[in-house]
Amino acid sequence: MVETVLETHGLTMRFGGVVAANNVDFRLGRRELRCLIGPNGAGKSTFFKCVTGLQTPTSGTVYMRGQETTDWRPHQVASLGVGIKTQVPNVMDGLSVHENIWLAARRFLPSREASQRTRDIIERLGLGDLSRRDLGQLAHGERQRVELGIVAVTDPWLVLLDEPAAGMSAEDVERMTGIIYELNRTAAIIIVEHDMQFIRSIASTVTVFHQGSILMEDHVDRVMADPTVRNVYLGKNA
Amino acid sequence: MQNQFGRDAFALLVTAGVLVWIAPLVISTYTLTVLIVYGMLALSLGLIWGYGGILCFGQAAFFGLGAYTYAIAAINIGESTLPMLLAIIVPFIFAMMLGAMMFYGRLGDVYVGVITLVVTLILYRFINSTAGPQFVLGKARLGGFNGIPGFQTLNVPGNPDSYIWGDGLYYFAAAALVVVLLLVSWLLASPFGRIAVGIRENETRMSLMGYDVAARKTLLFALGAAIAGLAGALFANWAEIVTPSLFSLGQSAEIIIWCIAGGLGTRFGPIIGAAALAYLKFLLGQQTLVDNTVIMGLILVLFVLFLPKGIVPAVVSGWTTLFGRRGAGKATALRRNRAGRGAVSHG
Ligand SMILES: Nc1ncnc2c1ncn2[C@@H]1O[C@H](COP(=O)(O)OP(=O)(O)OP(=O)(O)O)[C@@H](O)[C@H]1O
Ligand SMILES: [Mg+2]
Image (cartoon, rainbow over all chains, first blue to last red; front, top):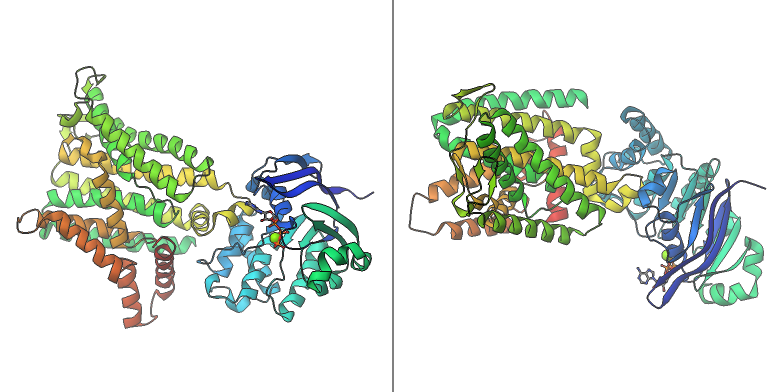
């Protein structure tokens, strides 16, 4: 059996009366590529936030590479080598593309190497011409790409992407798919997405969330064909 | 980067040298000394607010703490070297503890403002109430609202009878400001400074990159307090008395106004803002026609309305539009960008 990089047991998150995540048992293997789907408010982002320390779960435990990380703060989780893209864009709008990515690289590398890595990743992302521009001046798709660069530049072994394709052009999505495959050569990846086309193109195991719980976990084709899933999710959206 | 800093430092030294030499021809060194002290005080807030996004309503607390630490230590020791160092260290440690409490407690910006304000009020009240003879630290009486007069002022290290005062104090204060400015410039060009700016721009992202935001904000906050403490000690030497008004909210508010007027997110803006407004206040103090605070308030309103980014960013962008992108255009543009951001994210 493959090594487990992320595991949760009975992960539960309550907001007053709302149970945003309900007793979630989740397991992700090394270099696995997993898609998380579910209707709005199903608890996907909440699950991410609990895993990354942005929120502390009400109960349950989180393990990363066998180490318990349940009550860790975000910078501790990130320091392990976990790259995170949140649903709302989280970038430094007042700083240049280069500075944004350099700051990410500098966390794990000395300044000079960080600059080298930053230049490399900017080339790979096709952002060369925009390197010195402030992020606030860029188009949405370009900013998403920069955020992906921030995640990729540190060579993480676990990557969590919350709706990375949202609002992107077809061309941008294609480029991003390439980057995701590249990342996947060394990292396990979880992607939250609504775009079925995109999920099918990545074709992996899909986990379906519904009302805070895992409804189903299977290959994308079987998930799409499942009547219950179609009922709670696809029926309304597609 | 290193070369850039070297050139920057050289330009700074030359400019400062010329200014320090010329200024006494126009303004008395006695007045200039206090302008320099206020410049350093403004720089301390400009560092943590303009580059770290920490709006502290109580920078005067560290200023007062530095001044009182100096006065009390000078009375007890009778020589000024160690008291000067203590005036930097005590506010630094105090701010480390206060900052750790606020930033590890993940308080929002507004609460940080409120807490620093309340701490200043408490210190002010406390110092004011120490008039009784029971409030003694070693040989020093705290003196309450009367303050502490008659302490050993700055002397040549190891030689308590050889005082540094008058013109000497002016040159000493100027040199101290230049050294602090060089250290701040170096800090801002270093990864620590760049990471601080990143935290100012987006704390969540920086922590998701793996940076311990609370630790870094605490350290930056304490460095600002150390600079304010040094300014306080210099002020004590200039005034030759320390009083509770150093801790007053009016003093804190003035520091904030200096920073806004001079330009946040620049190194020179707060210093220039402080020197200009403090000198204006000094000139206004010599007339009785209009009330001082009214004019100060008016100036603040005018700045917020017409020059929201402050003097330095406005002058720099005016210069670049007039004379194009010639010469050190890159450095200037960088500074202007920083300035713009400071004003945008905290305006
Ligand atoms: N901080 C919060 N306080 C209160 N309720 C919250 C909070 N965060 C999320 N919720 C609630 O928890 C539930 C799950 O939200 P979550 O954002 O995890 O859903 P999601 O699956 O990511 O949805 P979407 O597809 O719209 O992003 C929702 O009902 C939401 O209103
Ligand atoms: Mg979500």
